[in-house]
Image 1: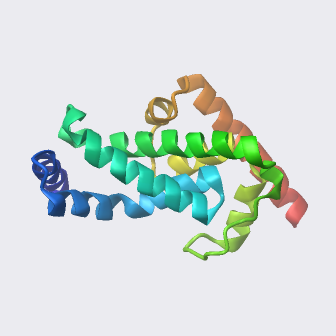
Image 2 (image 1 turned 90 degrees about the vertical axis):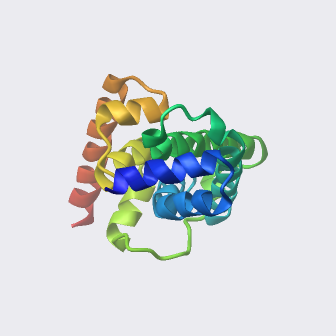
Length: 169
């Protein structure tokens, strides 16, 4: 039922129905926030990435071929925008100077601290896999990686977290 509703909203959004588009964005906002936060680790940049992604989606929604893939398409655009922001930031500042976001969410604080120890490439695949239940093949498509690279990054991310939790105790 929910998939049919989403497909109907996408169809309406393609006809430039602003309310339908706003509802689609509302339904995906939490996922957009968490995915972009896992890459950028900075609330201001997350807001920029989300804003740019919403604008890109509105402008390009007519190019979406299949309505049922709206969320995947939206997240792919978001990931591209996050990487663009990271590339821009590398030109101006060292990434080690960034502070961890101050906003609290439903993440366990200990897990959030452990995830912050991970390199962005591990954080992204682990967030998509464990938080959003994406399959490795879907993550590969979203992140523009091979399936074996996603599997390797998941494994290495788990190893780093296991070491962190071993040292933590």
